[in-house]
Each structure stands twice: as C-alpha cells, then as structure tokens.
Amino acid sequence: MESLVTKLHEQIILAIKNVSASQKIGLGFSGGVDSSLLAKICSDLGFEVTLLTIGFEGSHDIEFSKKISALMKLGHLTRTIPEKSFPSVAQEIRSQIGTDNLSWNENCIAFHYVSELAKENGIDTVLTSNGMDELFCGYNAYREAMEKGEKAVMDLMESKLENEIKMMRAVNQVSSKFGVKILQPLLSGEFVGFAKPIPIPEKIKDKDDLVRKHIIRQLALSVGVPAESALKRKKALQYGSLIHKNLMKIRKT
Image 1 (tube, helix red, strand yellow):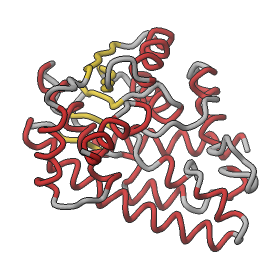
Image 2: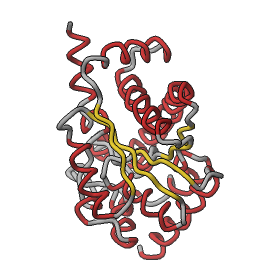
Image 3: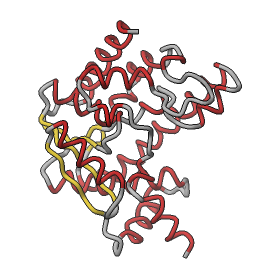
C-alpha cells in the first residue's frame, strides 16, 4: 500500500505540472479531502495558491473551508452568493449551457461565482479536484454497484468519468465569460489511465463503506492535510454551498 500511495502522489504531481503553466493559481476549495489534498500538493510544489470558496450565507462550505484553510495556512477568499440576483444568474446559465441536467446546472452556477471571484482578484487559472470522486469511488452509487461486482463498479466509473469530462466543458463555457480557465488535472488522460486500474479495495471496501476513497485519504494524511479534512465524509459542492437548496426553491415557483 505504501508504494502505491507514493506512486499516486507522484502521478498527481505530474498531472498538476502538465496542466498549469501559471505559477499563480486559484483552487476551488470546499475544505474536503480532495480539494485540500490538491491545495497541499500545489503549495508544496511552490505554486502561489489562493483558495476560492463560494456558497450562500451560513453554508457548510463557507464555514468549514475557513477552518481548514486556517489550519493549512493558505490564502483564502470567499464569496457569499447573493440571494436577490441568484435566480437571474441561474436562468442565464441554464440558457447558456442548454440543458436541464440538474447537476450540470448546479456545478456551472458554482463555477460562475468561483470564476467571478477569481477575476476580481487577478487570477485567470483555477484548478479543481474533479475526477477524484469518479476515479476513487467517492459517490454513494459505488456502494450500490459493489453489490453487483467489480464489473458494475468499473462500468459506473466509466460512465461517471464521461459525464464529468463533458460537464467540465460546460463549466469552461461559463468561466470564459470572466476570462478564467478551469483546469482539472485529475481528469487528464494520463492520470485517468493510472488511477482506473488501482485495486478497488484501495478505494471502496464494500456496500456498507460510508467513507470510501481510502487511498486518497491515506495520501492526504501522509502529506500533512489536517485529519479533520482528510477523514471527512463527502458533501457534494451543490449541497455544501446550498446551491441545490436554493435552485430547488426557484424551480418550484
């Protein structure tokens, strides 16, 4: 396991170096294990990292990210989503990306605000940890797939990856309005090729595994990510930011 963790670390480093020519980067940050691990490795590599967090007032992501960023001693900016203008932004994005897919809309809305925050602070390159949940069985759906066997898990992984790659193209449509590039080093072909064959038990144990992403958590602890982040269970961006809750309010009216 230790050598595999070391190889994983090396591959993440390569993936980051391969996508970003800029030394000044923003990083989409929730305080969870994925974004915290990416932030720590980028910082260790000498990048000038600014953590970027968005969410409605009182949201989990805003509060938790402040705690973790302070522990990591990295620069951190937050943006509170204004309730008054949120409906018009949501409608604009829905029209721009041309789909009613709820997850796509929620993520594009989130990155609209991340990109706006980045632009206001002179940042034109933002890295994200998208790909971690897909490749390391972070979603609850992987628990259900475990009951059907390894092939079902790998089929789900393929489907999740395909969707995520397409969705991030839509995200970049939205961010281009601000002159900001959203980069996903962990969705690169090289990293996907490395991560997919990692044995499933290193990612998820069984159908009752509520934690998942075990090798990612081990790596995070080994490089100095605070345990509170490294061991935290997943809370998806759209829920942690309260975007899902507020978007559902609009759609019901």
